[in-house]
Amino acid sequence: MNNNDQQPHFDIHALAAQEQLSIGMIGYGSFGAFLHQIAQRFLSTAKVKVYSDKHSIDQQTFYNLNDVVSCDIVILAVPISAYEQVLLDIVPKMRPNSVLVDVATVKHYTTQLIQNLSPKCAYIALHPMFGPESYRKRGGDLSDLRVVITDNTLNEQQYAFFSQFIENTGLLLVEKTSKKHDQELAETLFLTHFIGQIISKGNFERTEIDTVSFAYLMDSVDSVRHDDQLFKDVCRFNPYCLEVIERFDESDRFVRNTMLGIEREEGLK
Image (cartoon, rainbow, N blue to C red; front, side, top):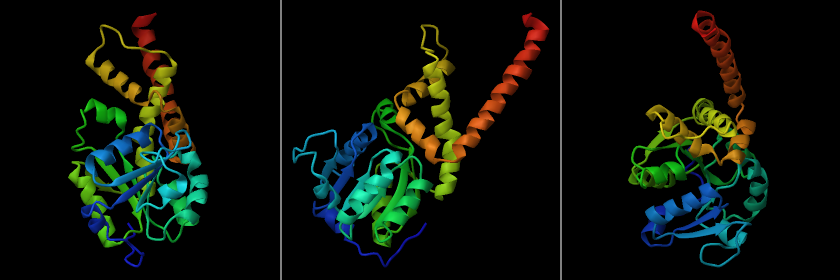
């Protein structure tokens, strides 16, 4: 963690208390829309402004880019592959005392981009370990779900605001380095995506005689079935994913050639 008390900052607690806190969000895909929903629920007094090239400006939810990047907090909810260009577009337009929030699924790559392209910007890099599907299935209950914080240049007051907000929603705060996050994510979330994509592309579906374990498996498949872009971006920008694929392939060959081969010889001929 890197808390920098020398960063110019605004009094984030005072802003929230006086109903003046403004939150800008760039990107409005499924996860961006989900974050918007969370902000409206837990920061109901804040003004949320969204920029999306897929929605018309209405000055109610959707605003032009200049309005959004002038907010107190600016959240990047864009595909990982778009991060570099978006940063190049917004950094010259941001206020010097705004806080940039990185919520990408990959942390080391995006953090390096922020540090290189906006070295004077106060930022926090975090990753909610859940999404709209999990939120829906839990009936909006966030308790005991986790948010990982990997890097930040916030002053003590700003960091306290974010950490307190996370805890107030019932979420658990976990601190890790960006590299450790990416390594563990490759072996968990990415592996789930990898298997889920294989099952989805194989057209395996639920039946009326599903076991409980198969239902759990298909729940995982459903949670990643429509995340093709995220799946590709995570694999591209998280180097640990290739190691996971190699380990999976090796295990697959062992099961097919050794375990199933033995069964055929003993009883399946």
